[in-house]
Image (cartoon, rainbow, N blue to C red; front, side):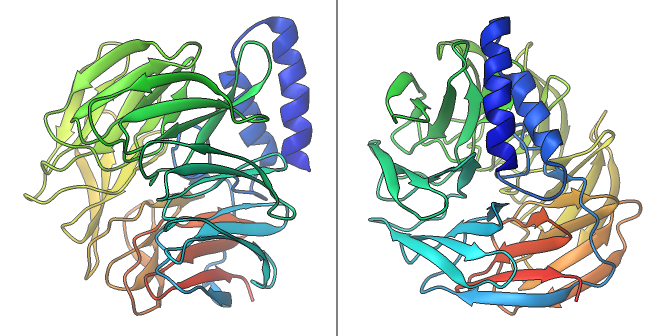
Amino acid sequence: MVLNMFVKRGAKLLTTAGVCSFLLVSTVMSALGASEWPIYRGNNSLTGVSDDVLPEKPVLLWSFKTEGQVKSSAVIGQNKVFIGSDDENIYALDFATGKKSWAVKTGGGVSSPPLLVGNTLVAGSEDGFVYALEAATGKELWKFQTGDKLVGSANYFTNKEGRLSILAGSYDFKLYCLDLLSGKTSWVYESSNFINGTPALFENMTAFGGCDAVLHVVSVVNGTRIQQCNIGAPIAASAALAGGKAYFGHYENEFVCVDLKQGKIDWKFHDRDLPYFSSPAVTTDRVLFGGNDKKLHCVNRADGKSVWEFATKGKVDGSPVVARGKVVVGSGDGRVYMISLKDGTQLWSYEIGRPISGSPAVAGGNIVIGSDDQSVYCFGKK
């Protein structure tokens, strides 16, 4: 597949150059263009931005019913949609029709978004295991046991030996670096509380937060701490990294921008005394995120000043995706919204009827999102 080809080529180049793979990561993701969405938030820095062109008025193309709430977010590749469900299954669905290709049963709910790397699908489960599966068939390649549940997605990079590595955080307080081929541990970094989100990558670093109220900045080379910033409140969401800064919200009703190298907060945004669980989308000049205040916020990336806000009728705990001037997000009011990036006006919406806590995946002109009504939905051009 396309991703596999670029991964192999990039790994060879990196071995020759003797450098780490963060350049490979961005090269691979840009080479994919808009036809795939193989990683949570669309790229390894988790910025939630797509080059995809979405239709002006999407229609429902298909839906797939599971036996549990779908809090997981989808990834898309190899003409398949991969997503987890609270019914303890990891599903592979045909991207065109929504028909089930395969399902793999785990020992717990799967709220963690999967990760597709080449021909391997990696997914965490609330049973405490990281599963590596053959993407085409669902065949188990390996599984790795942590000390508690996993709710965030995995991320990946290529190490200095040119081997692909996986990063996964667990409720056992630890961030694991695992070899993609074998599942063996390369290093382990320990925080002091639950790790909730997905570790984001920027240059030679990964950054993540958790219930210890600290943003950890860790070297992916050896798992040593580079920097940390005490936020003062638990961090539920994944941070997005761009331009040496981390963008994320926390339980004490603020959204912040942190300088990764200085370990200091650049700016804070506060609207109402309600927490932020949504991961942001970061463009060249704006940051977009949802809140328990039932709003989607758009702020200036430089200083955190409000540009516009869009009100829904439910909590916006899911994360927005920006696709060429359009913003797609789900809400606790049971609707999927498409909003203008320019001025925050509503362009389209679809009522599912039950809360949506997951985030959309965007690829091939389509939007894929799960709902508490136990279903996965695909919207696109008729």
